[in-house]
View 1 (tube, rainbow, N blue to C red):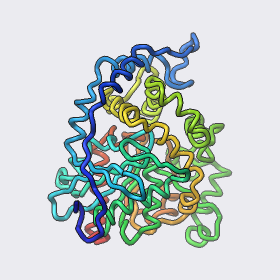
View 2: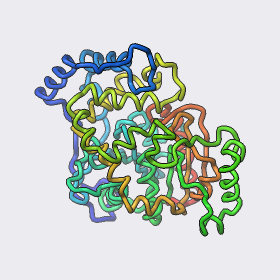
View 3: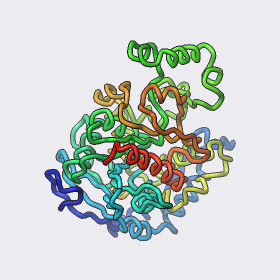
Length: 425
């Protein structure tokens, strides 16, 4: 089946439909939700400091049990063209929405954790159709191995670099695109950078909604190419980030991927990067446990950043949208393989080798105020061929869900730049 340009050796592609929940599985879910046993909590209200409190979790458990309609969500998801293709011995799920616009740009969109392809459900049509006269795209949303309907890896070692290799093969050998643009957030940003560094002849533009990179430390490379930026970084160590770069220019707490001492928000990352098997038992067997584990992230990482304790989800993410994300993990039994991706990536030599490298292809960064991290713009300039940079006034870790129209505009502007400057044909 030729879905792309027809210039490559197309692999085996099968149309795929988001399935109904099997009756036996649905009955098991409802039984578990009807018989939940809530954990012991302190008598004093401590808000969200200890994690997701019962008063936030219980109403969502009841909504999942009594109100949520998977068939409604399934009908929406099946509006788009889903496929699965075998790539590197794994069945990979993806959406491929081709635009009717002859100037459309092939766009690979990659989500992070805890998310799925569904994160982009509000932006697919607008990007494909060139909403508001903006750039149109052939939209490809691919699921990481072990996320949702993509088959889970069977052997150790499948981290970000393996994902990058699979997605490049998807865009080129399977779909037949000679060149493409990539957008990513969270893990999608890491994989997107890998593609930008490893395949610059085909990956022509890199857009990210996650602001993160190496600081301009005094290495020979940085000292040669960005001596002033190195000097500023060294000064910031002594004088503070706000003094050197300006107030609000950065949001950096931890000193590493799992520095929970300086950033308690990284607690999930520490356990998922070191003991994913043990954690997976509770999240796999208990729908309530799965819901609570994800809820904490959707509460803490969405806009506005400092919510009132009574707020569970922001107005921009509905209960049904959140429960669809939870149901996708539960239905596909993929929470275990998704958190294992942290362990594999934390130990991925390919990712570690690419992280400090400069990205030569045109790059764009959209900074959303409630995201987990933010680095000074000049750090980004030292690490990327930065052609577009914007600090938005709303949105967090899930911008496609929280402020889809804003993300569409950011991606369209960068896509138009790539076309106008003829980086993309």
